[in-house]
Length: 488
Image (tube, rainbow, N blue to C red; front, side, top):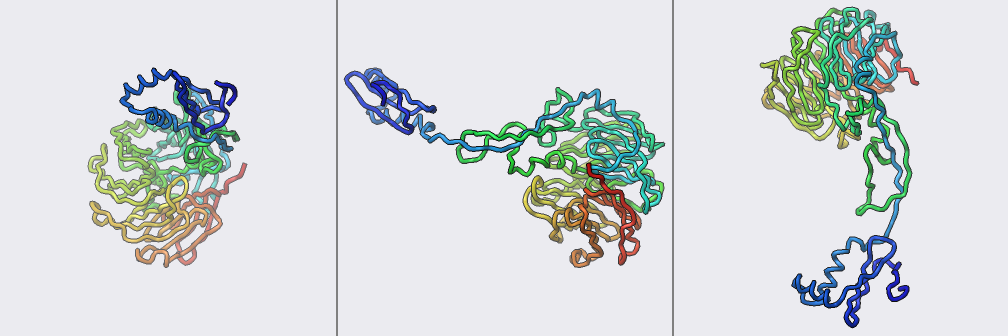
């Protein structure tokens, strides 16, 4: 103590005494210094009477516990984290950017789509590669359609539908190497304050990129440990630090191939299992994180929203089969009917552990790959085989371990699985109880993402590029053509 009313620099101290006429209480404050509080004894006794406290000791204890939150040693910790600040473009700039340019090299391919003799491959957030596939052994990159914020595509006739951040864009592809925008439905896709897990202000425009900054600073310790964090911040140890934007690109949707041969003329195109767009007859269906939206496309160039219904959270993919929609979510599979195509009706569902989950269907069975890890949740990596012969009550029949599966496809009981870092795996799925025992082929050394099985030809997209396989002879499945990704 420094002087009669000096400052105490010792923490966690409590000093109290009664002197003639005064009661002096010295309690630690939440600072480096502690100043005494002097209360007249008569005033203290009056306070005690009002609170019905009968002893000075009880009053003293009340004061002690009321400030117990300050009875901690001061401590600091070093926090290393990354901040992400949005880079905005105006809505006007985004909406004026759609055009066709000369071909570009593949750099970050996303979802793919088959239409007539062309393969359309989304370049994440930038646009669509136009690949002439008349000769599957020699695919030719012919043009690039600039569509900012694109991830998903679907097509019917001479019209292509593509998402562009918050809008649905309609393009005339009668001359696909000179595609041109013909209409747009604005603000139909979710683009709120939280965008791909990061915060952006839609009032300032569209967040088209994120600037990363590493921050190292001393902070006060937090009760129970941990880090207080900040908006758009991730600890160095957080798995999302550099993968957040990439993960946003890994959302795809599309239908499964029917009886179509590569190069044949089809009215409606074909997508993969990771699709969020699909076309059934005169309707385009799209899914977002929580919403199933139906568009009437009786006039192809003028899609009209019919319904937009909330169907839960964690919606990932949509797959059409026999007048039904099979929807993959992070917690299970949902089945919707199309008796009223304007407003699909819920039929049934089956749950699974939290994971990323595309679906493919053939006959009485649905096949679903479950992928765990950040950001999909849990650590499960597996193939589920689900009996849907009773569409009202789907039943999980078999589960097979996988490494880290993404998309899949099924055609005539030949099952194709993109098992991430382990590449492409192909199985005979005739006997549902022995699928992994009946492996037909394995192509390692590629990072497989999704497939479209056509008649005799398999289309596959991966982190490394676009690949085509001839599987007409199941004993001699072989790679016949590819377009590699060109690193920047």
